[in-house]
Image (cartoon, protein in one colour):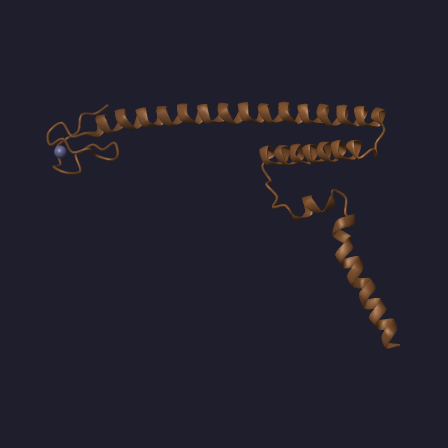
Length: 146
Ligand SMILES: [Zn+2]
């Protein structure tokens, strides 16, 4: 009876230990910290393909794979890698464009801020009122209306 329980526990442990290895995607994907950005996702997929390519190379050299199979598998992997590369270049281009737009918006905002503060500056004491006001917040002089 005790032996049966021990065997059951052992079996359970073995399934528990082996389960991540049997999961689709392999143990690497399960243990890697997941970068959820599209860029990170593409990079991870590319790494997996390069891993596969290395494995393929290794197995081919070890004589485990027929030259024909090796060729077609290799071509598949390379095509996939090329596609991922293109996709991530697109991603980079997009984030570059986003950064450019952000810079332009920031520049425009800074420009506006500059002209704004200028127009709220008191003509009498020079105090830069933070808001458009009728009377200067510092000396109380009437502000030139817009
Ligand atoms: Zn003033």
